[in-house]
Every structure is written in structure tokens, then in C-alpha cells.
Image 1 (tube, rainbow, N blue to C red):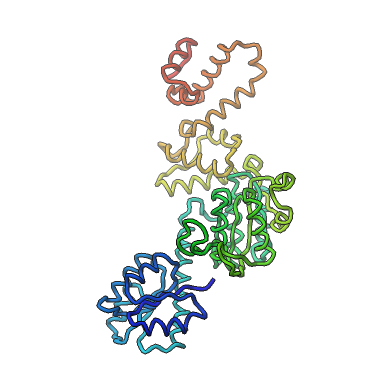
Image 2: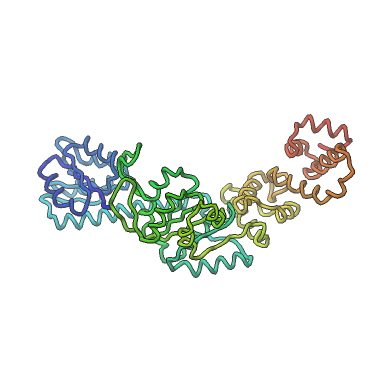
Length: 453
């Protein structure tokens, strides 16, 4: 997609001549007053501005400051016929990329513009990477010593330096995005952008624009051109998360990208080439969706050159102790705590827990425990109710045969008694676990002659 340049100079002849010199390589806008120029920047995606140091009675340095307030990544090249060292230093201090003097040499100007656009691209890239590092789950590496995870590590090592399409499957919370990031950041494309987009989180009408971009006026609300994720991921990697939720119409357009390595922004007939590695992930059974005619066979086989299936956490319990230690460190650092261990009964419980939310749920449990811990250990009462209730449920399931023949009152007494034991006699937490009021629990304790504090 052509870069966009704005010429802001109070001399119409200069605007016309520069537009003529640049319009073959760039999309060029021009304005002879600052108000109009700033309106263009607000309504268009401008990459670089050629800005006169004097625009009538307006100081170009003041305009420079306003441009940077709108978009700090725009590269600004200052122009003047009255070049001085002082004005050059002042311009650069205020964010200008460089400073050139009139009369302009077109050859020199073209080289300067090219360097300015490279500078602008690097600024956007650095900002993107900084945003990546701020994400909550951007910790280094993937934890696991189980055979299943060791196999995944071997696959990552084999795939990182080739452009083979990869399909990552597994339940929600197993770490599919972490595996995709590991492939990208350990491979030959690691210096380029990694872009993830959740296909299930964006309405179908907007997803096409997010992926491929759009032209101004392509649809209601499209007030200016938008760069799509594929362009931003060019030379890097794009992760299409929850690919199973993509509509059939959009699947056909994605298939074209994979087969021909090109696409059209929404509302444009212009064709753009793309060189981005594509990784897809899903928690759905795509073969089942294919049988239901909800997912294209040809797209499935394009995406699924190599499949990496991440098993649920309940099927790789030998990874749990490592994950306990990892998340203790993560959340101690985050919360400024010094929780060193899990109490024995907590570790026993968490080793047996089913983790329907997988690694993401485990991370939340440990964070909750670290937050509520009062000393150097996470104890039972510092765990979420759902986890403690799971222990009670498991205990009752193990005794299911012995419950046969008991009356409902006898079963209720047994459940309340076990809940009190689990919560060390604490009535408030027991009442919360059982879903009754403290007053109601107190009456039941009295009725069944149980102990509680």
C-alpha cells in the first residue's frame, strides 16, 4: 500500500511542483494553511509531512507540536529558505525527523523521504513491541516437562525457521497463543511483527476490515483509510485465533491470501502482496465443523500442514509442580509478596483438581492465593471457593455408595460437616461454599449439633 505524504507550505507553486514530483511513488496531499493541513492529518492516515518553517504568519514549529500531538509516529521533515543551526536544532528537539533548506533538490528530497518513512515504520514497530511486552501473559517460555510438552518443544524447534502453515489445537486456556509466539520469536522472523487477532471476538462485518484494512468510505463509519493486520504482519507472523468462528464468506477470502499471497482492502480494487507467516488456532473440532459444512475443506488442509495439539492440563499433571513454582514467582513479583510455597493440603488438592480452564485457570488460582496469603504459604482458605468445593465434591463422590439408604437430612448433615472440616470450622467461608446465609448455617449447626467457629 502506497505511503501517504502531506505537503504543508503557504506557496501554491511549491505544493504543486512537489506533488508532481512525488505522486508516482506516493499518495500526496497538500495544504497552504495549517488549519487545512491538520484537518487532513485528522481524517487520513498520514505517514510523513513536508512542513515549511514559516507558513504565512504561523511558526512551523508550533504546527509541528500539533502534528505530534495528533500522531507522534508521523515523520516530519522541516523545509525553509532561511536555514540556521538554531532553527534546525529546535525543530529536531520538537520531534522533526530532519531539516532541509530551499531551493530543494528533488533527488536529495526523495532520499530524505525514504529515510523518514523508514524512521516512521520503526517508530510504529517499537510501539507495537512495547504493547506486546505489556500484555498480561507475555512471560518467557512455556513450562512443561511432560512427554507431550517435550514433543511440542521439538515441533517448535523444527518449525521456527520455515514458513509452513501451522494449526494449533487445544482447549481454551492451554496456551495456544504462547506456542504461536514461541514459534515466531525463536525463528527467523523474530525481528518482525507478531500480530494476533481473535476471530471470535470481532463481528464478522468488522473482521474483514481488521484483517485486510479498508479504504475511506468503504462502509458507514469508515472515515479514513485503515491498515489491516495482514499488512502490519508483513514479513512477520499473524495468528488467527479461534479460526473455527470465521464465517464461510471470509474463509474464502482467507483462502485466496494463502494460495495467491495477495488481498484487496475493503472498498478497493487495488491488489497488495503479503509475505506473512500464517498460524491458526482453535478450541473447536474443525473436522466436525467440516462435516456440518461450517468450515471449508480446502482452507482446513491449507492451514493444517502441521498440527500442534496442546493437551489439557488434567492430562499432563507432572507439569503441575513446575507451573506452581512458575506462577508463584510471577505473582510474587507482580503483587510484591513473599509467598514461598503451597501448604501440603493445598498442593494435594491442586494436584488432583481437574482445571476446566487449564493453565489460564491455574494462573488465576495462584494469583488469588498469593493475593490472600497472610504468611509465606497459600493455605486452603486462600483458595477460590470453586476449588475448595471441588474437594468436598470429590470426597462425597468417593463416598457415594455409602450415601445410599441415607435420608436427605442425614446427607445434608454429612455435607455441612465435611464443608466445616474443609474450612477449618470457619462459618463464613462454609456458608459461601454451600450457597446459604451465615444465619441459615448457624441454625443447621445447632440443629445437627455440629462444630463451627
